[in-house]
Image 1: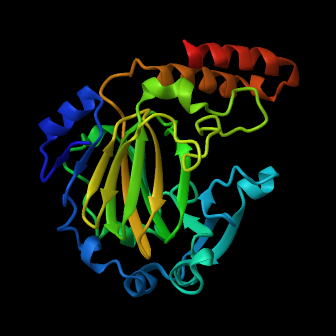
Image 2: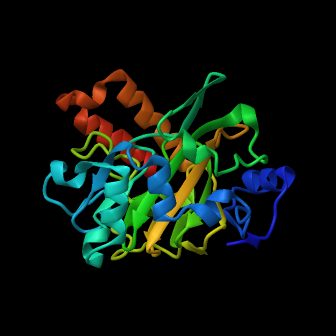
Length: 293
């Protein structure tokens, strides 16, 4: 995977057009978050905020090895301060159980020219920089992620169709990425099937790694560019890991197998046909054709 020290808006646009991931080494090293986001500092800033969290006994989020959906997508509630204590103290096997992501609570969201900021998490924005390389009119969402050592995010693609700059602020992560052309080999949960996580692979990337993914090691201050529709998974290796993700809309629609397949998924979900048991077989047939085309 390419690694560069600094990047301009024109260079990022080149990576976007080439559909190529890249590590922007140290691109966030000068952000205040990179030097100040210790557990103690963050507990002072937002320690009282009540959060909903992902919960997994195995540290794999979601835990698709679990026998029931309630366990696969389990959640827990906690004050941010208590959550930080849970992921930074005690036995290592316990620290991986909880994960906070923007799925539960976004920091900033921009839709139709209007910007919404979560007041409780707004202090986080004081310590980061919205990368000037991202076209302001295409910024979509800003998320924060916090985790302890041992968390693993299941292999998936982002179904919002956005590019992503993933800024590693504290801790370390291993990133694995597969291009959209690998869709068939990555075996997403089928449309019309029982599992609604259609953008997730049925494969455990640690046991059944298909092909040879691109790999990157992210250190504090590094920023990873993930082009839209690329499959990816992360292994969280630091004792206290924090990331801020910046998603933005591509300049033009993508023409690749994942984008085409997600258009089918979106249409089926929007119409409500996925809730019709009689349509399940047809949906799976259409989905299989989209995946294997």
